[in-house]
Length: 395
Image 1 (tube, one colour):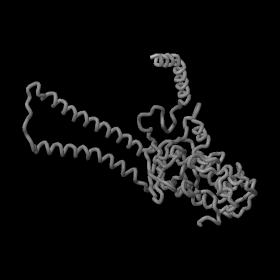
Image 2 (spheres, one colour; image 1 turned 120 degrees about the horizontal axis):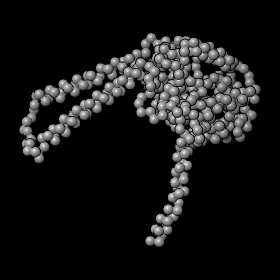
Image 3 (tube, rainbow, N blue to C red; image 1 turned 60 degrees about the vertical axis):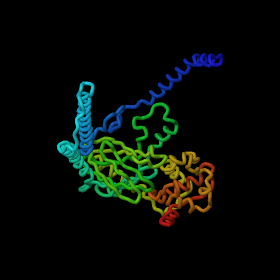
């Protein structure tokens, strides 16, 4: 008894401290408060995203039409059932009727549900068919899912030939690694380094595929979601009626970095889009390196540091130590090996959890390999030239 009393007294003594800790925790949570994000999602959002395409508007209408129809049916059926049970209960003298095989009842409960299903199916089929009609697109873009980023290739229309990768902004990843303490931006874990840019009022066809595992490309405000499957090509489309920034995420559980694979679509005016295309083509021309160029170790390592930060640091960490199943590059046997072809083939073709990086240029691959071979404790002094990467492609 004395032990129990002492424990109870101890709990009472600690109660103010516990209450203070809870209050501090609440304040810490309040620090994470964010505002509505233009283009969605909104704080305490209960409904679908505000629609910016006709398809999304039709989907929102269907949502409420189906919901109200089901609620009306539910109320009607259960109202009749409960009325019948209450009105014809035994306690007021009613006796059960003795009948079976009523043709009238059979006809009614067959025809009425059939008409209800047809009434629900017709508008749904109309929207479904319209959402799959990708003909007469004014701009065609291929979206390729990678673990864990999106690659965009402008295949047809204004901007044809433009290609880039869209990766979660590195500062947001660092916030997540630190536990998202303190204030976080409204677009937390949705900001990317290179958003997909499209013109307003134009029909945009999105072709989806994947490089490794199943991903899914979708933006709720557009009313689109399409699986991206390795070895298969699927497509969807949208026509945004408003300019602005709209967000989505990979909608298939694609691995440990699934939460860090956002989709950011920037819809701009026609004039702004033309200016963006011109800027991108100039940027691509500036980055078009001669694979025969011979680099110094200092110059190519400096470029490799940027390539590593944009594509590798999310998994292998900035310090090269790796995490969990991700192997460390600092002290790695493959990185330290004098046979450079092992690491070159690893980046080109992938192995195990390591994805292939063929989408990077020969110079970028040579740069990041040189950087890893000469950074942290890896002081090999080895230099990889772009011509060596070019020679290994396809092997």
